[in-house]
Image 1 (cartoon, rainbow, N blue to C red):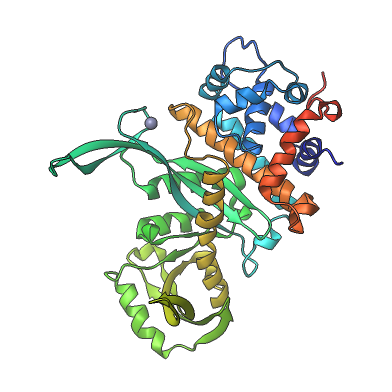
Image 2: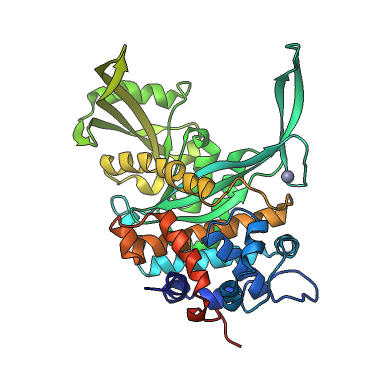
Length: 418
Ligand SMILES: [Zn+2]
């Protein structure tokens, strides 16, 4: 039998030098009795093994195999919480960035490219909400409720929401970075802070651009991303925009390109050189898609074939100007990936909605560790493990096998010797 857990650490170390990089992650505890490396490895292994809470992770540190790996005795959940609060988000982010950069150097993102372009989906996710707890990083909103007598009243709801940038490929998804929305700010402001930092940390050449939903289709946002050097494909929904109306009229004179995809008949047209609300952005391009397919529905116990249609409009800026229509169509749809795969996985398997310490730094560190654990597990499962690749083993089976391997502690070696 292969010792999967030992292989996972070896694989991650070989693929992107994980161990020395993990050891370099600092924290801000004073005179710590437990080395940061043991705590950080514990938190990361907790994420890789999809453990839902600090209590669960602390419980697993009772295992001999765990202690042998991290080189320390059991760790309490209080200690782990304290470590999160005194964690160093900059260092964890640096680690995440260095892993992704190494993947790029190793050409692991080639299969995720669309028409030769590497595109990140940018989207927000609400982590949790609460009516009572409140920290300095909480956003708040008023929500209307009804009392038992049917009378409406308002309460304040606190929530945490983060913007994520993510690349999804056929084999794995990688979160490039994430940024929390600050109290009172708009999602687009957090997204721009995120993209500005990504530009500094990854460099402009790492990516060609981003895809976003209609929420971000606003002049100042598009202009700011353009200035960063990246293209944008964004959903154009707002009929109040002149460009929306103009594209609808002008498309009729444009040549159409047709193909079929997953049972759908696709028709795509484009209109170039349209002015948008922000003059400094220059002219932009709109790509329009009509999709038609049939779906079986049950009507009165009888199966009926029903015609379905959907219409899409995407606004295209900057670097994506020369991209073929089909590539834009694919980029526009690829952003479904961030909801369908990454957020589903992160929420269901990595317990993203759980907040172990309601405090801004602790939460940021926790989320960065979670997305790093998700990335390492996906790479290991889908690129390394033949059994998963061939469909003989599910991701959950693999996770269970990694757990069992903790029992075969004789075969485990300490992550860091000396
Ligand atoms: Zn809060």
